[in-house]
Image (cartoon, rainbow, N blue to C red; front, side, top):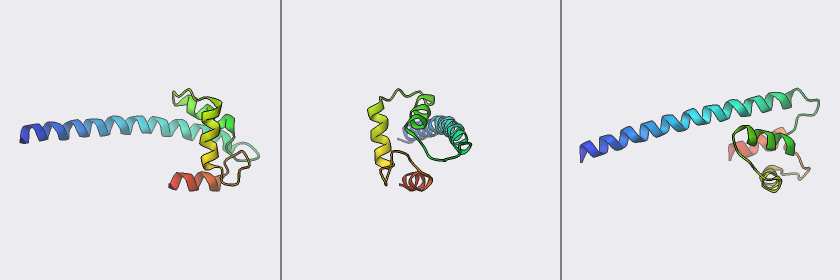
Length: 92
């Protein structure tokens, strides 16, 4: 039993490291997109921003999928995600 359990723990640690590296890359891509948004006069996340961020992560979302994602976060239904909405969703 112990040798099997040890292998399982090693596999779990390797999986954790792999996922951590992937998330680190995704976080870096997200930070790039947010830096671009910060340079604009009005700082909110538009449909185009969300689509671009998802594509930079290797995803190929349809416009409907992106609209649905934004609708989940856009509390005041103005078609964009402002800082408060972003933070609220991030905390969920």
